[in-house]
Length: 327
Image 1 (tube, rainbow, N blue to C red):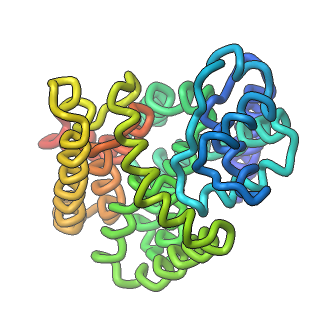
Image 2: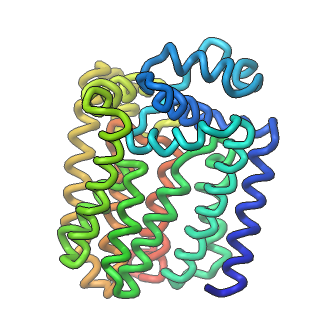
């Protein structure tokens, strides 16, 4: 590996470590992830409020209580995500938060490097696009999105380089954010035959990890209860850009708004997956097999944080050099 790349990766990680070592960077989302991991490790249901509340208020630091003294932050992630955070919970919270900062900052560097190699856009424009859409808010909240984006950009770049097996491995990690990663993985499996076995093995490994660490009850709870209730709970959020939130704001009943948002997610992503192959052929860009469904994943839907819109950036940067699509 190029020495400058290694240096950039290390420097990014050190910056992320330093930023999240600060008490001023509260990293609210990471607190919920950390506490859900601790709950799972200690044999509790990681989706239940009681244990999460006790951990967030007493097991993290005083910043949480000062900001959200009456709120329990949920961790609506699949059990395989929470299994990974159970490892982080072995560390004291402050140290785990700092290491998480190093990891997501390194992921941002990987995303930038992959996009610079993938597109014909000047590096300054690529870095500006990521700075605006990803870097500040994801660091301050301690989100998972940077890891997703690094995996998505890596998958697109590996497709461009004619390495579908490795692209499948990268695509598996997009399932850390399952509603973002699923369309990308489906597209890859449909349109790149050589990726199917690695994708199946990767997805199977995540499923086994989730079942081994949490069991059937919590896995079923995630799909049956956690996802629907979390979508309902976010309808008044000012950080949401989903179709469900828009319909709710226009006066539609909550349950109906979530139902229509869910249907729109299926319809828009089916269209994105279907169009990905022809777009890749017409524009002579295999990366679009991953980049196009990554972008449709953030259109409509029942649950879409504003920070997740960064999933559309790779497609935008791939299309900018195409005069007919630039607008």
